[in-house]
Image (cartoon, rainbow, N blue to C red; front, side, top):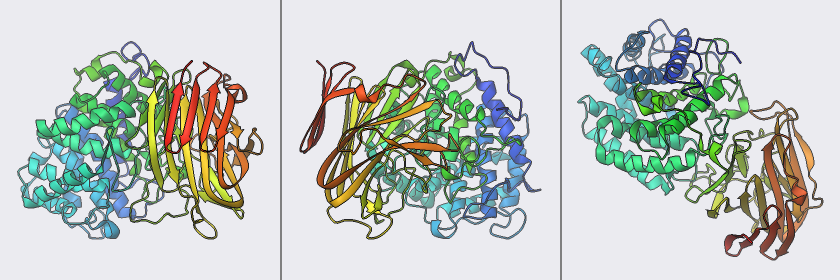
Length: 631
């Protein structure tokens, strides 16, 4: 699709895979900002972009437009050492002065006050972007402001320090505000307390493998990269704090071992978790690693991932005809959104422009692009900390994530029966999105009791591991029900995924199912006109090894209409159910009915032989363990 502003010619000598250079990144930032500013209020304090409002209201959405675009402008100008050819900072300075003049007043320009998350919390999110933008551009904006405007800005920002955030990454918003205030000589006991509180929480949320839980539960998603790593690493980098940078940067490096594998060869990030309308913000941590030197990737591979993600969305209709980022994935897509999503929400994509903090002579921009990890070789990687299993295949450039640890259910919450498509599915990929809540669920194990189907909510990891070219992850969950009693006492579903090449062995054991119950397992959701092929084949415990195609009329972020393969079988007491699944692109999908032989099920143990190389896999549930041996 055409991009509604001019870009430089592609440079396939320096960037043989994407064609994008630093000049492209600057041009995209300029184009996005120019389009957004056409919707500014006369004083520039609010940017009212078109679209359905968020639950926070129109005024908060207007502040969101100002704050999130300011972040892109700040990266753009700071990365150019203050060169501001479009006079962006003048606009943001005027908007800051207008917005902070009478906060809370119902007029054309005034910003809403920052209050508790359950009262009026969204401005706290935006305060971090305002503070970070001011910190990045301090020599050219903050230091030139009238002292009265500085005082008003500080007074507004301190609302973030005095009110209660959401119990997750939101604590990094007052942390970022406090970091800015301290950087301009306005720190005190209040700023120190906000920073200490955030640091303590961040430590308590660390789960290993470079992954943080987003709060006290088990929510693992893109917020790791664009929030939980970005704010502390960038803070330490800007402050020149070597000890803090070594600590947080070391974790970022570990995180990038896995995150760098979460981008397909076409540039797409995994469609997994919430706030997916932030799109290419998913690459922010990759670029931050390159900027700070805390990365396992070469500069050429880092740029290939970041530019690949940026171009992926620009080429697929993420921009409206006005040059605005739409609410969705490619074009508008309601099922990818949350209630807090407003017209300016997609501009958290501005975080990707942290790449521009690398100057023009940095290796991130001067080295030749190199392959992304998915383009180098088939790879399977387990991440025991978050309970995830990554499976990448070079031939089709597809990455799959098998979810055995991320559920977004907080510790204090009961297990709601509402399906959460962004976390509750068994698997996600760079080429498919989950089906909508009202449609048949893809990649889902469901128990039916008296005709009522269960959903998967709180996920309990049971282990994960990998070897040369293969890996596994396991978990259990308590099936909960939308209709009727919310749960069946003693009912438990245990699940193991084993990945080998493009194949997925899915083994499930149900314990405590009432007599006469039914079980269903679905595979990947794909559209009839897509090149992506979804296959599912029953090996044990199903009525028929061949799946039935079930329509999903609301489609996914990739296709307006999809179908989902589904296996069904009977269950009661303790039963085992085994299947093979596969997601591939092109005509070379492997025939699953011939992929394995000699399938044996003995109580809580499953053994089989892989036709491709004669290797043998043994899955046991007591205790959860997977062994894979080659002849």
